[in-house]
Image (cartoon, rainbow, N blue to C red; front, side, top):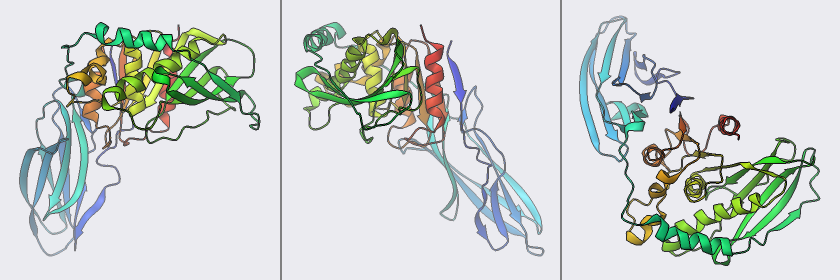
Length: 373
């Protein structure tokens, strides 16, 4: 059963004081509410106007503007107010919305003193995949080619690192077309069989070494799908297959619990994790943050590699994090992918942008523990 949890939601009423002030007049967002709305609860924004002048009455107009996340104007309305000396007045802006994400601003004389991104019933955002191509005809030959390509893993221990719980290795894997997948791996020093977590980094992330002083019960492999120029027809499919290649390698290790292989990634990395889960059923679960990579204007030859067109084939449980203020992988794109996933799933919406909050790692690990086999 789908579980909807809203975390770290910024309240409009928190610490927003005197964002606009003129002489003795100040404005405050008085009512606190979450920035994502459900169950036909229309957004309500209450603005209190304070007149601290002991002698003069104050009258003016506030403007509320609402835009879709694509910049289309949805609402524009004004409210006139009048405040007696040493008194206050409250204005309420409320508006019905269709499922989606929006930008709201409260203004006075072209001065914006409050703006925020909000959402309404994100699980009802319409999304559809393109079924005009045969998945089997498109992918079976490509996957066979990958399987026929030797992994040719080059794994070298980084001896200069003095770690307590896990040894750190550099990893180089051979993938389809002769390309290389680079990574770093942390392996517990104590002999045993462990669950494995593969992390696919985003395009703006530097490849990093997992810590050797924590997570002593996990084998961590951090990978970077190949970088550099790729023909557009091969871009999506090649990088998706690079993630599958990392799974091939982990699956070949004797110290890995083959029933408990997990994938995670952010942005582009998260999108390729979704695709890898659609192409390979060996994963126990996946965690993605802002997987908003979808080629919506894809020509016919690219449609089989569009992440959105693959998401409906994911079989493992998926947890997704979304940054409400993310301008790189916008929330709508995240949910267009998420809403097509039919396996057990769960999402968290944060106020952050494209970078996950610190709590996201803990959420992902707890999700993996829940679905250990």
